Amino acid sequence: MCRPGWAQARVTARRLDDLTRMRRVRDRIDREYAHPLDVLELARTADLAPALLTRQFRQAYGASPYDYLLTRRAERARTLRLHGSAS
Image (cartoon, rainbow, N blue to C red; front, top):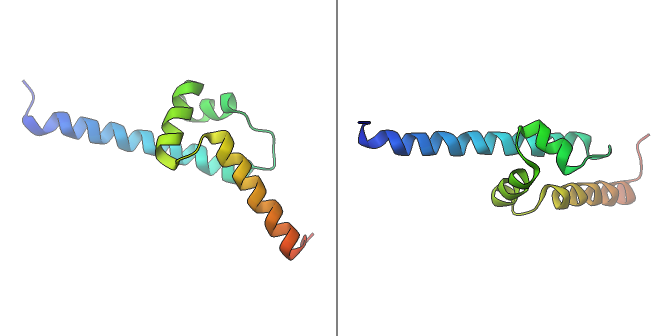
């Protein structure tokens, strides 16, 4: 039999692993928001099924990966409109 705290430790480790995957996906969106991205491509980044990625991403960040991507693009467009393009 396993010790009493081990089950909770496994659950906690799994949750941290899931959050690490979601951070990796979010970071990729933040880096590559100007390029075409889809949920299938992002799911490959996290090594998850697309539906599971969407569910876990929404749980972690309060929005689907696609909604987060659109928000990121809108923020960038707003910044460029207000401050102009540096290039």
